[in-house]
Amino acid sequence: MSQTIELPRVSGPGSGLGDAWRVIVKNDDHNTFQHVAHTLARFIPGVTVDSGYAIADRIHNSGLAVVWTGHREAAELYWDQLRGAGLTMAPLEQG
Image 1: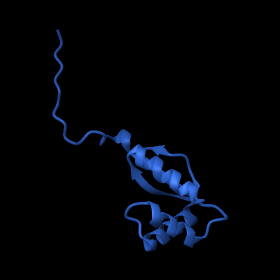
Image 2: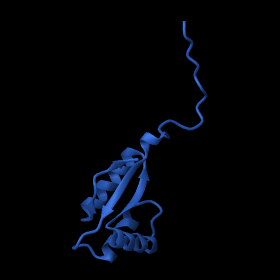
Image 3: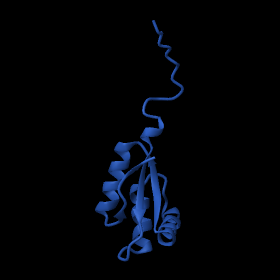
Image 4: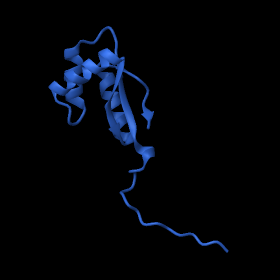
């Protein structure tokens, strides 16, 4: 007869790698740097207008940028808000 050994939890529920969802904004020809920077600052926690401009520059130069990573529910909310504000979004990715 085999015995199951349960290891103690070292972090909270939902903290596994399966819960890291990435919100990705893609470059486009219709959004200005100003609009992208202000939209990111409005909806993404911890993003200021200044850091929004840095992210907008990364989107412009690389074609896309991960703007937020975390739990699926929050990722879906931020993705919807950014898309609703007119940003060009890549599909949510689980990382």
